[in-house]
Image (cartoon, rainbow, N blue to C red; front, side, top):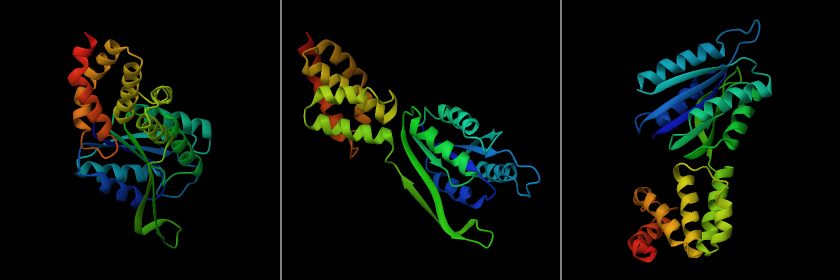
Length: 245
């Protein structure tokens, strides 16, 4: 369901607001912010102040907001614990966008690491905001979104699809077992298992999976990456009952 935007918060609101504006109005979206507890004698605005400002802006756009504090923003293990908790809450979303522009280097690194190792059902996009920096060194003008989707899950999905196109169903199946069983990755995982079972003449077990994939396959028919695989699932569904019997 929808999109989740997860951001690490520092002392500048403008890049986060730019990221929020990019997801507003398109589909259901939710914002998750992780801010680091302010250091002693840290001048305003603190990360908490920035999070509150962004919260007001996001809610004015109709976006729900959840805020989390990293109590030790300079401690990797502490930041990882918070980031992993947030990413677990995002497992049900079709797309998770992780913006690591703000916050301490430790917090940003922890967020990226947690995202790359999380079991997410949807597509994961890593993002940071580039632009011209002001006299205070902060990015505030001519901001540009720089994104990457080449995460571990995406790499495995690409390798599985390549093996399926080569009819190498055994390798595709074992590679796919590393994928989360949700969203796009979950469809690839289950389709690879169905084709492996079919290729090994276990039509009954394969048919059970293919029937469960009927609705997802219909949704992916026009997808540039998954369209052919979805079409194969639909065609097998037409004959699977008779073959199983």
